[in-house]
Length: 296
Figure (cartoon, one colour):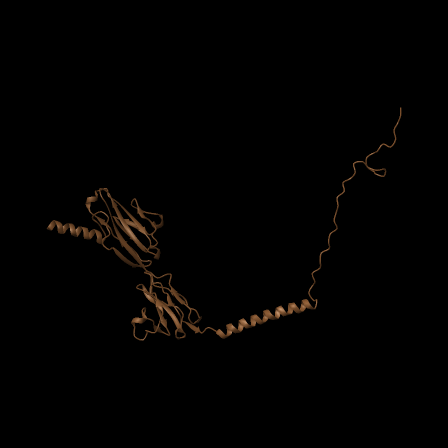
C-alpha cells in the first residue's frame, strides 16, 4: 500500500513539474519579473543521474522557435553579457520583454530528464492604437479595433461608449439588451454586425494588465448616417441626361456637316507585269544585235 502511494506521488510530481524522465525539479515553475530587473531560474536533480551529469538550458519563445541559453556549461553568444550559470541554476542580471517564454532545464547522464520554467516579463501597456471610423452608414458591418504592442502579459481590452463601460456580453446585462455589438476582450475588436443610428456615440478603448496602470486611446465620435437614396437617384438621372445630351450633340453635328465625312478611297489602277524581251530592238540600248553578215 505504501509502495503504491509513493509511486503515485512520484508520477504526480513528474506531471506537475513538466518532467520527462525522473527527479528533475524546479523551485518556481512560473516566474514573473519586471522588465530590466534580475531573476533566477532554478533547476535541481537527484544523484541518480550520476556524478558527470550534464545540464543545459533551452529557451522557446511564444512563436515556437527554440535555441540554447547555456550549452556545455556556458551561456551562448546572445546571452553571454547578462546570463550566468551557478550549479544547475540560471541567473539573469537583466531581462527584457524578448525573454518572455518557456525555459527548459535538461539533465543528461545515466538518465535523462527535464523541467520547465515559464518566465513572464512584466511590461505595462502603452497607449493603444485605436481605429474608430468617424462616419458610417446604417445597415453596414462596422469594426472598431484596439491594439497595444508593448504590454506583457498581453493586455485585456475594454471599450467605453460616451464614457460608460461596455459589458463584453450586453445581452446578459440589464440596460444593454438592445445593443447588438460583439466584443473580443483579448484582441480588442468591437464589431457592429449591422450598425444602427442609435449606435452613434463617442468611443474609446482601454488596455490593461497586471504590470502597470491601464492606458487608453483618444475618444472619437462616430456618426451613423442613413443611406442617401434621393441623392443616388438624382445622380443616376443626371448621368442619363448627360448621355442623352451627348448623343443629340453628336447627331446634330453630323447632320450639319461639322464632323469630317468619310471619303471613299481611290481605286488603285491595275498593274500588269510585262517581262522584258529577250532580244532588244534597234533602239534598245541593251545587248548588241548583229544586222549584217560578213563574207570572207
